[in-house]
Image (cartoon, rainbow, N blue to C red):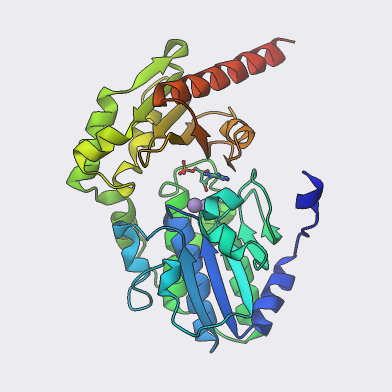
Length: 344
Ligand code: AMP
Ligand code: MN
Ligand code: MN
């Protein structure tokens, strides 16, 4: 950690709850290209605060994907900064599920000196504010629930059903419907408590995992055809250049599940998808590991981060092929280093 990062302190759950308790109005930020954990956590916090008579608003550098719009319903039509009601001011700015400044996109320039607290669960990233981070937790939703429980008990209030649903959405989303290794006994205990309080888990999971748009499936098919294997099938990489995205008329949301196509092939230990969101030579890398191979170390080396088994970064390269080679070389090198470590 650099000296600049060191200036931020780790907060306890009760310190975070106290700061929220004392605030009248809170702005909640979350990461660009938001997933269910980011949106579920942000809106769970918003609706907790609203239930306590405070005001709150949630924003992100990119719009919420269609499949997660249910989390916003009757609350906000948009999550772009331009959606903040005119004249609304904030006593506290909190980010959720966002490990690095780069994940804040354009919000970072606007809010960099104004972010009071980050609430997160990523093991690798670059802190940009005082923080409450539990890297062992399945999701930001699980971390946030500890804060919300504390805040509600300070206010002697019950958790609104909508908050329970949003926390369940966050947890299920980041655990791949409770399938990944980030699920712990406490994750299941919390999910059980939420279901017991009336959350319809089957409905939420169907929305999150049971439905795909036709476009998404066409993109997955195209990605499958473009999949390259390396190291005898231990590494699978799909590249998705901008011209292909344009040809399919695909949105960034349509490309979200491409990495799962590469990840689930038998024998693949490390899967990566390299996307080119715009014509610029900036390539968004999503990496997944199905073993103890730490993809967050590789992503952190390129300014990104994440978790051992799921991480991301952005590479600036001459071409998407050059970006693919950078990823292949980095993964193969690390695989070799780990093999020699295990031999000695
Ligand atoms: P993605 O491949 O974009 O779904 O990201 C996989 C995981 O890595 C998620 O938990 C992300 O929040 C995290 N992640 C992605 N990009 C970054 C970054 N630049 N810094 C820190 N964490 C990241
Ligand atoms: Mn996320
Ligand atoms: Mn998360």
